[in-house]
Structures are given as C-alpha cells and as structure tokens.
Image 1: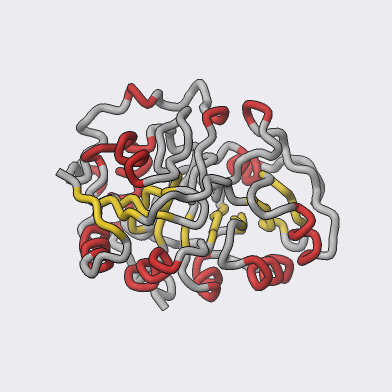
Image 2: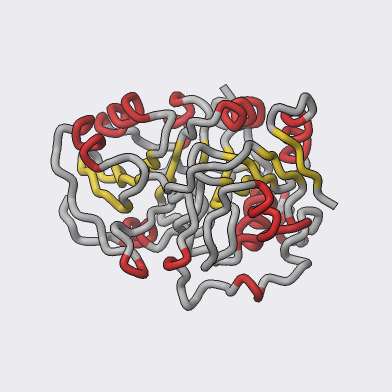
Length: 292
C-alpha cells in the first residue's frame, strides 16, 4: 500500500529518493498542480508512467529540472531566446520546447525529436531533482479529469499505482505557459497558461507565431512539456481512464521488454521558419496537456 508524507516530514526526501531509485512513481506538488513523476533516465519507470497516465505514447512526457544549467544537458541547442526566457521566468510556470539531445537513454514517448523542459518554483521538488537528476512528470490525473490540486485528489486518481504521495497542501491549478523554441530564434506559443503572453514577449523582444488551436477549443495547443491535464484534451485514440487495468498501474510491475540491458541509464544530466507544421512540431502539438 502506498504512503502519504508531508513534504516537511524529515523522512520525505529520503523516501522519495529511494522510491525513484527503485524505479517507482511518486506524486509531488509543483508550483501549479500535483504531478506524477519518474526518473527520466529509467526507461522502465517512464514506460510505467506512460501506462499509468493512460493516454498513449503520442503524448510524450515533459522533463522537470532543478537548476537552469541542466537544460543544456538535455537540449541539442539552447537558442539565445530560450536562454533569455529561462533567465527571466525560471523557476516558474513556463515550459520550453527544444530540440532534444541525441543519444539520451530515456523513453519519454514519441517526441518527434523534441523535449519539453520546465523548472518548477517548488523548493522541495527542486531539492529532489538535484538529488536524483531530471524527472519525467505529468499532471497527477487521468485523461479527461480535472487536474489534481491536492495530494488526496491525486490519490483518488491513482491509488496504489503510485508508491508515495508527497503532500504540499493545495496548489493553484493554473497550467504553465508553453513556448516552442525548437526552431532557433522563432517563438511559437503552444499554450497560454499562468505566465502571460506579454511577459514572454517582453523577454523575447519579438512577436510570436500563432500556435495551433488545441483540442476542445483551448487557447493554444499542448506541447510535450504541458504540465496540467485538461478534461478537454482527451483524444479518441487515447486510453480511457477506465481501460487501465490494475496491473498496469502497479509501481512494482515490470514487463520483460522494459528491462533491456541496452537501455542502462548513463549518469543523470547534471544531477549537478514559418508557421507550417513540420513532423517534429506535429509531435509537439499532439503532446499531452499534463506536467507539471
């Protein structure tokens, strides 16, 4: 049976580090909503997270970091505009979509060669990430349901499918703003969230390209770094919350094909253009509205 600990419990950090090291899933508070997370460099753990979330591989997982400098270890290139945005708005509710570093031993889903990254403004989560390395994370909810703003709400979604729930009180529930900077200095808004567009423009000094409309009439399409689930984002092809079997939600379950020795994790990353849609940006626009 899974446990719940307050984030100020003396055992909370150690228990979280141990669970992640064992390839298990955690629910943690972010500065927006609660997220369910896994070690980003454990393919077995991230595949389990993809199954538990129940929305398929075409909605890739975003990555949460604890320090700005970790970004350069995950992205093939960090354009100047991305550096300005990170300097101005991290930590905070801003997700950046960039070209992913090649050769990474992770499985975040069908990313189309991009990675979405966020540095949450939550000290406990930053400390956890800086202990274990970047985390793959998505909103602690099932597809088609409201984002979890409390640990109890997250438990109602996942039950014993998550090893440990870290309780940080009630969260605000407003999603992060997602900006695609994967095409150099071109800025594309994929979703309007807690960070106003005007604040992003002030940091970039340029007008953004319009993002594609999100499913269900959202203001912007979800990129692979979206951090909160929206009930309007469920795709007909996605697994229904009721279709996930208890076996799939078990943190202790490991299928033989997940433990390939070829996917052994390397050292974690620093644990210290026009408006037309390319194949890669199409993958970004199909990503989940979940994260952190």
